[in-house]
Image (cartoon, rainbow, N blue to C red):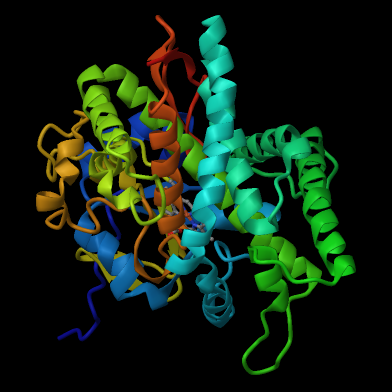
Length: 455
Ligand code: HEM
């Protein structure tokens, strides 16, 4: 009798595929629609054929929990993060293993409650400044694109948290480079064959230029701080003063640059998209907008001063944001890669397989949500919030690599919504086409043309 071990099968491969570039190519053309089709047809776990890579797609909470938490030691970040490395270097989002762990320990204190409390007044001030700008649009009755406005606002907040000062004079240029690099990274993912970045193709040159501009901004700030020789109460000084427990070494300029750029980009691109989607959803649901405004007005009119200790009393605002991130998660998919062969859901996952977890499908699945496509902030009411599985709804990811800025982001977004809706309602331009573009983040493809109406 044969004693050969029968190997588990690989997850099923879709029969639909491009003749040369495989089934993965179909996803790159229209990610949200095609992925939805595959998940409905092939279920919680299936393979994708992609030239030179092994890829599996996983969309069940148990399997997501297994990969991100229970067996996370067998996984590194996936292919998409390799591409992000040209922008973020070896910062917190893209680094691995003991090095990542050490950096996470060093950086975590910057996101503690006490630190967030210290940042609250700055966040409110930035939101007020944006509201003043919006009141000019309201006065002239002109439609404006909310997306770049939210990008400028969250850029203002994150740069003040990192550098104490804003990048006011450079906000425009920085915002533009981030948009270019987001597009370039996504385009790289879409291209089955990539020309290495050392070759000066127009595409590669465009990337180099954008990176150079961002690098200059960051290095200039680091240099200035080193020359001043004083320690400030911000993330830059905290990182500059941090010492390795064992070696006593501090971070060199390159590592500082990577960590700052990571937080700068991760903390800006995500929150600005999430806020823009929230304004959109509220504009489409006047009854929900009304309920949220009532909460805001009642509290503020009763003399509640908006601040770190009172923000949690605006419970409905919190629910609105959570529900908005369910339907439009700024990070719509996370990915990992197996170190050793694994077994998931009864299938064999070979070594070095990229495993995609497109969390947007769990967020919108009929299996886990009643009327999944309906915007219903009541789902997140305190009485029922606890019963939502952490891997059915996980806009900030899960396991040890969960977003370090989740509390920062929730605080910032609540303060901004309260400040804006205290003064305005927002109306979508009639006939404006709204469409989600799944880049690295889920962006509104054409921006979001809206009108601010004074209350
Ligand atoms: C709506 C806002 C945000 C969303 C939806 C979001 C989402 C996420 C997700 C899903 C991950 C995990 C990625 C993975 O598992 O591969 C992540 C990681 C990360 N996020 Fe956020 N994020 C947001 C805001 C922020 C902010 C405000 C900051 C910083 C101020 C930030 C900094 C980071 C960093 C540094 C990581 C990497 C953490 C690590 O691997 O240790 N994020 N974020």
